[in-house]
Length: 241
Image 1 (cartoon, one colour):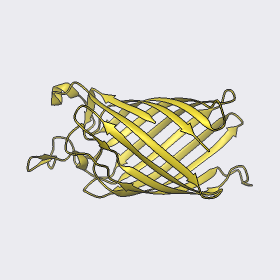
Image 2 (cartoon, rainbow, N blue to C red):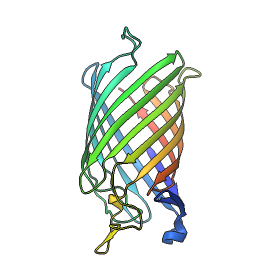
Image 3 (tube, rainbow, N blue to C red):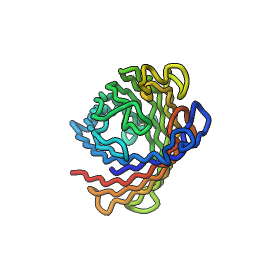
Image 4 (tube, rainbow, N blue to C red):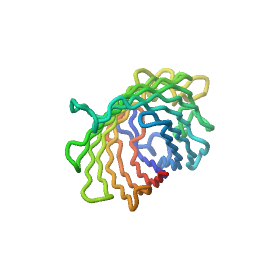
């Protein structure tokens, strides 16, 4: 997956602020190449690994890596009570190799754990909905996050999928940009921010064969706190054996 995030504004606390006026930077642009691998142990248990390499004008390096395991508790196609497909996922986060302490930093530089519940259901042969709710805890004074995501999907013709998604991440503690604790002994503590964000994205995917899939997503941060007001574009190539 190839992702580009760009912004010329950010949220200082919850106020929209011009990036150039506040920092002298015209724009923040981050390009990330992600590699994800998934392996099914059996019909209900799967492993996943995701890592990447990111770069911008000032920084480059390996992203944080996540290693997860998912356990399907319910399969909607064999459920007798109209219960949605339900999956529990747990993951370990390993910090990447990059510098922190600047607005262009690739990440927060922390290890952690993540736990979430994912549910989804076809409400007709060509329409499906899904949702995820979870909790993320990291070290190095990075705030814990609560997060959720909801999405709707349409399958208008064979091999084509359309989607719309809304996701929200809420930091449960942290400091604000420019306030006490933001700068300590000459070090800027971007990783300690209370960083909230709301993202909306739309997507299109096409599968010319059952094994191959091409995808495109475009999204925008529509609200937040102490975070970039980013536009996000992603191109995805997926192949299954």
